[in-house]
Amino acid sequence: MFSCSALILKQEKLTNDHYLLTYLAPEMSQRARPGQFVHVRCGDTWDPLLRRPLSLHGIDPEAGTLSLLYRVVGRGTERLSRLSEGECLEVMGPLGRGFQLIGREAIVIGGGIGVAPLLPLVQVLIRQGIQVTVLLGARSQEGLLAQEAFQKTEARVEIATDDGTFGVRGTVVDLLQKRLESYSSVNPGEEAKRDICVYACGPVPMLSAIWQICQSGQIPLQLSLEERMGCGVGACLACVCRVKVVSNGENQKKQPAQFGVDAALTSQDWKYARVCVEGPVFWGKEVILDATRPE
Image (cartoon, rainbow, N blue to C red; front, side):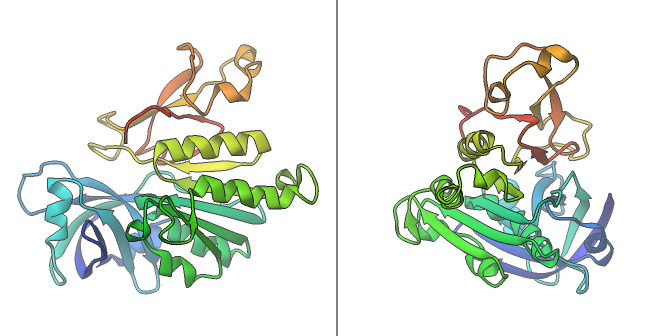
């Protein structure tokens, strides 16, 4: 972990609610990994008191810069959006556990602002020689984020919108299902044999549906969770989620489908994990999602 006062190089308004902020932090950029986040102080006063956790959307060690794609949702991020080029940004990071690169093929899925931590992942996967398909989703064309940035990579990019104003009409879950069906239409079960890993970030109902698909196809899945945070370093326990516990042979006997998506579990089946430390990236096989949680 590293803390610094970083120079803001650019603050760009993308939509009415979304901004892209780039700042100079050479040492932090060297340490940062895809999937990690930073804790940002949003002003020069004690109001708001708490920092805001923001995913790393751009990591450029050569230029010594990092970029944050964020949405204005409250007083803190609104104040952050008012900072300008040349001002300083108080940043702590990089924090948390990022993505692990496995397999020879990757399907990277982002819904809405969930695309924020995925661009550095795609760039690293491609540099590692891994074939990448990116599935982007939003309610409408106006809600699509970072589309052009993903298209500038060597990844195959597919887009879905709920209202059909751009790409196909539907969701990223539909795109994933069709992608996997294209594999298995030739040979049943082929998707599980292609050495695929799925990476996803977005609303919990979307992640739950993706979990179900990957579970049925026995496909490795990594999920980046979005949670409210207090301290960002695991001390306050404000950002916990539930994860599977395998403490004895009894848990081994449980069907995997009992985990992943919220179910009737006993206290021996799960424990709390801190998203800011043990996450924000979790394996699908370990995390328990609450599919009914409001967004």
